[in-house]
Image (cartoon, rainbow, N blue to C red):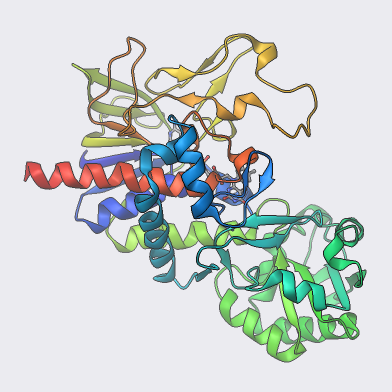
Length: 431
Ligand SMILES: Cc1cc2nc3c(=O)[nH]c(=O)nc-3n(C[C@H](O)[C@H](O)[C@H](O)COP(=O)(O)OP(=O)(O)OC[C@H]3O[C@@H](n4cnc5c(N)ncnc54)[C@H](O)[C@@H]3O)c2cc1C
C-alpha cells in the first residue's frame, strides 16, 4: 500500500502529526501497536511546569530561558512561535470533537492530582480547569473529596491528608467521603471490573446521572468545592458536567485516576475521530517491525501482521514513544530503537541510567535518553547519516526530561507539528 505519509505510533504526538498532514491533503496512515501514554495521563497538557527545580508560573517566559540554555532540547529546535502555533492548532482540533481545553493565556494553572498535590499545567478540560485557582482556594472553607464505594483506584483520605498540608488550605476543612450507590454496585460482576471506565459508562446513563448528582450533593454537606475521581463520562462529558454542577449547585472538580484515565481517553478519542474525519487511515493493533532504507531514504516499512507486504510512503514520522511504549528498548547493558536502529543519546554504563533515590529532585537520567536528531527532527542512522525522509516526534526524542520539566505533551505536540509542517511544505513543492 502507498501513502504520502506514514506515521508509526498513535499517541498524542503521532495523532497530532497525522491530523496536520491529513488536513493538508496528504494521504496519511498511522500504524499503532497499542495503548499510548494518553491512557495513563492526567489529560492536561503540560507545556513547561518546572525549570531548575522551581515551579513555572509563566511558561512562555520560561521557554525563553530554557531554549536559550539547552541547544539540543526539542523545544529549542521548534522555537517559541511554532510552539505557540502548535498548541493553538491542537486546541482547535480537539474543539472540533467537542473536547474544550482551557488555559490562562500566558499563565500555567494548577490541577489537583489523585495524591492530593497541586501540579502546574497549561491546558485542562473544563472539569479540571480553574481560572483563578489560587484565589479561589484561598477563600474556601470546606472541600469534600469523594470516592465511590468499591472503587479501589482512588484514595480520598490520602488526597485529603496531602492537600491539607498545603499552605493554601490552612484555613480550610478538607474531608474525605465515600458514597454508596447500590445501583452501580449491582452492575459490577467482578470487583476487578469496577474500574474508571465502568463507572464513567454509568455516568453516561441518564437514569443514573441525576441520582449520582443527588448523592454528591448530600455528601458535600455545605462544601464550597467537591472533588471526585474523573468519571464524568467518556463521550458526553460536557453535558454530564453541566447536569451535575447545576443539580448540585456546587463546583464539582475531576481528578485523574489510575489508568485507564478517562481524561486522557477523551483526548485520545477526539484525536482519533478527527484524524478519521479528515480521511486518515488508522491501523490499530499492528506493529512496525522493520524498515527498508536505501541511500539514506526510507523505502518501506513492514509490520508484524503483514511481514511481506511493504507499506510505502514519501515521508515517515517515528512517534513510537519512549521505553514506556516500546519506542526504545533497554537490555541489561544496552539500549536501542527497534525499528530503524537509530542513533541514540544514552549513557553506556547502566549504573548511570538512574538516580539512587526514586523520588530524587533531579529525576532520572534515563528520561532524557532517546533518538538524536538534527534541528529539523530528522534522525541519524547507526553510521551517523541523516535519514532524509524520516522525522521523529514526541517521547522518543532525546535531550529533555518530561518529568523534571513538566513538558511531556507540550513537546509531543510541538515536535509533531514541526515534523508535519516540514513534510507538508516538501509535499507541496513536489506537486
Ligand atoms: C504514565 C504517564 C503519565 C503522563 N502524564 C502526563 C500528563 O498528565 N500531562 C502531560 O503533559 N504529559 C504527561 N505524560 C507525558 C506525555 O503524555 C508523553 O510525553 C506523551 O504522551 C508522549 O506521546 P507520544 O505520542 O510521543 O508517545 P506515546 O504516548 O508513548 O505513544 C507511542 C505509541 O506508539 C506505539 N508504538 C510503539 N512502538 C510501535 C511500533 N513499532 N509500531 C507501531 N506502533 C508503535 C505505542 O503502542 C503507542 O501507542 C505522561 C507520560 C506517562 C508515561
